[in-house]
Amino acid sequence: MASGALALVLHGHLPYVRSRRADSLEEDWFFQALVESYLPLLGALDRCRRTPGLTPRLTMSLSPTLLSLLTDPLLLQRFPGWLARRRALLDHAQPEEQAAAAHLDQHLEQQLRRFEALGGQPLKGFRTLLEAGVLDLLTCSASHGYLPLLRDPPQAVQAQLRTAVREHERLLGQKPSGIWLAECAYFEGLDAELARVGLRYAVLDAHGLLHALPRPRYGVYAPICSPGGVAFFGRDSEATLPVWSASDGYPGHGSYREFHRDLGWDLPEAAVAAAGLPGQRPLGLKLRRVSGEGIPLDAKEPYDPAAARTTVRDHASHYVEGRLQQLQQLTQVMDRPALLVAPFDAELFGHWWFEGPAFLEAVLQGGAAAGLSFVRLRDALADQPQLQVCRPSPSSWGQGGYHGYWLNRSNDWVVPRWHRAAMAMVAATRQWRGRGEGPERRLLRQAGRELLLAQASDWSFILRAGTTTELARDRIERHLERFQRLLAGLPGPTQVPVDPTWLGAVEAEDALFPSLDPDDWAGEP
Image (cartoon, rainbow, N blue to C red; front, side):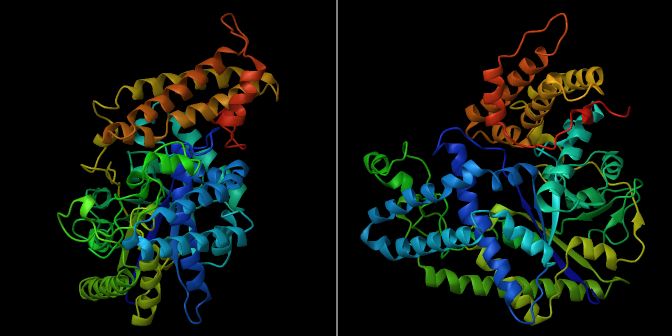
């Protein structure tokens, strides 16, 4: 980092969308993310790793719920068939879409081959990159819980964090030292909770540092250390805006693939049904390009892969040049190497922006050739002189910068229900702590899973965004109802015995976090 460096950070996350039904809408979320983002990203990073003289460095979080999906035997068994049913629909492309359809079919075939080369276990690819030193893998709160809204009681935060750390170590072979805070959300005192479970660094939005006390001397261009002994990095807007903004950034270019025009809507319902699919909906089969500003969806032009590749190279060069200029300017006003932290949702690369993985690969390749240094967050900490001690500001990277997107008229009804459920869990675990692995422990363990799943920030986000709100409300209600039924099954004057068949079905459906420990809610003995 002699003249500064760029830290690219990708946040990999999906809610727990395992479904008993094949081809469910929730299952589509996972498979589309797998084939459009996670497998292509693995391919791009592996090619960079194998390039002579190139040492790619990247930080990435894998949320515990995403890790559960990436290792779920049922989902991974279903994936090839899910992919085959969609590829068959490419035969229905219009004549002017044939080139785009052939390109997409080739892309899907490549991802299937990568999946098979990993033995049907995508997590192996991430472990390989971790062990090779390419990736610094962070954890996240267990179910992507929005921690500022869960802080009362504090055991709810600890359960999210402790479950996450254990699952990360179980599946990746080493304890995480860093965490991606869900939605980059921070509240005063969270640093102490992180330190208690061995987590030493995290990323905040810019104002989490810029409004810190005292104000950081280097702004967002160097990490700070909180009073609790946790380092915090700040998002640099200049390094992120060109990539994530569809209106002002690269993804909105006319030659790139159009996200909203999908063959699932274009084809007659009968053709979709003939392919064995349950009805019209987005299928991830997109054969048109953005085309130009203001052009309606039905007038979008066919996708041209060659033109998109040229644009990717141009944009990657422009991005690298911009970061080099930034670092050069910062070198003139800082007495230490500047650090540019550029965090993004991982699914921006591939799912939302189809060319994103190719862009990332071109940035890593072209940046190295141009003298741009890339650094993982853990290495950036090791390279830093003594950090300034500051109290980070409560913040998030959501709209408005604080907590309003997850606490408003559309979703605030769930917060008191989270609170009551967490208090009930604390009371129950304290009552039954230390009594061995009896049937009560089994009920408490599954109750913990249901409570964590009900706390996922994804459902609050969907309620606020107004998309698939019925599904989000159903998920919250389902998990809380199961939670209450499980606690009611504990021995006591108001016990309602739990049907063993029902319990087995719930355990099979919500089959995640095998390392969950109910005592996390009990607090200190």
